[in-house]
Length: 145
Image 1: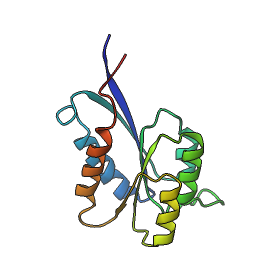
Image 2 (image 1 turned 45 degrees about the vertical axis):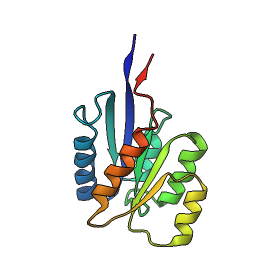
Image 3 (image 1 turned 180 degrees about the vertical axis):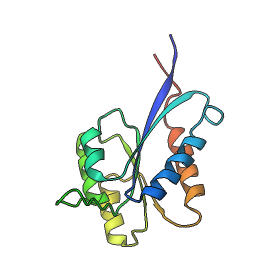
């Protein structure tokens, strides 16, 4: 029996409003009308600790902010820390950094760790995210089984 491939997407963004907008946007473009051969599960997290606690190898794509503030934890993790954890546990996972980070050395270091793409947070972020997701999804088989 042929089944649609389930693509799991996680959003890790500490800004509650931006997280909500991003989740809504990703849900709207990752739909049956755009991608009839896939089913999508989208989860959002407002801090690195909650994400890491629930992260497993079923996640295919992660949209990750670099600056992740968590007032409930003493240890503050940034996107680079989270990327290291992800790639150690699930190297095939596609991580897209969506951040205002402008330090080229940090972006280069993350790229060498396996960062899939980097998108600056700005007015045209939405279009770039959509294009990167489309290209990324082209690499996944449409069916399983």
